[in-house]
Length: 422
Image (tube, rainbow, N blue to C red; front, side):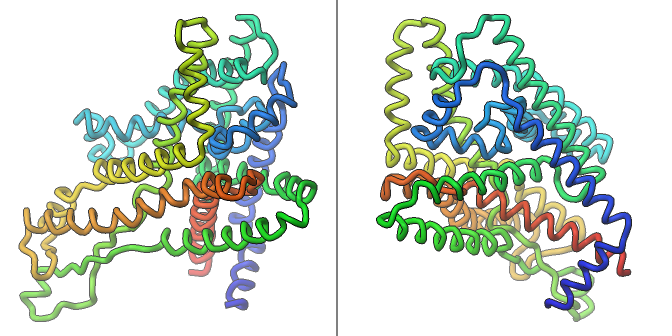
């Protein structure tokens, strides 16, 4: 295995095309980190640190912003608006048949239009989220008193930062290796590790060293579990009518159904739904709407209760896992495609019975996947509630994203190397 690794590493160094792609990714990441280090005007650093230390849920948003939220930088929103726009477009394939036809039946031209619409939707989402986040930060005293003009300038700046990151991510996808948007989030997660280590070293005492060692063991366990679950799948055996009529089944063929078909999208759904009331109450309270200040205080108290918040968060992640699986995986289409290609599940009649069988399999494997996803999502809240320590280097959600992106990147590099070998 070690010799194989060094062999492939030598191919990466020797091949100019792969080397160019890797260098492009490194350059793009450097540009992103430079933008993430430039804060918008009027940030109160002391209030910002206190806000993050008392609101761990908002800290999770830093994962999806690629690290830009923790510094209130030009890329404050990160690629979150683009991800939201992509989710809206995916949901619209269920609600609008024409959108579904464009995405599934018009080939590459239809997918190009689909992505183009997602980009256009990203702009108003970025502007609205910029207004909401900046109003929230202003109400917490993190941003100094802003005039309407300065607030408008800051909104345009953070929205432009999102558009720039979206463009940078697409360049990485086209000219680099791997998915550009995922790599931006991954780099944001990794960039927080040195700061977290220094924070732990300066705040660690003899009494809480066992707790930090427990965090390390737990992180290793979560990484191992994510690697196993990310590759886990239920294989349904498939046979073909021609082979069966000839009396030979040939090489075994399977229909793979992944345990985590939805990835981290249910977590994004749950985060968005839980964040919406906080943004709405803070914005309306700052605008002077009656009773909104009391509602804002109530929701902040609810968010501070780690057990109640993590329970609601867990339930939402499980619910959205089932919901997103239902809209992205269509047993009817799978059964129809099998029947058209002359394939069938041994012991199951083609058509409706095959559809029913596949639906049962999907529902059964979705439950453990949903429970695992929910458990990983609430790990930081449970640890904080039990130990009272909030200085966690990387939360469960961040680990899940980082491991999946890293596995995908390794597969892409291995594919490039294999292509050169042959």
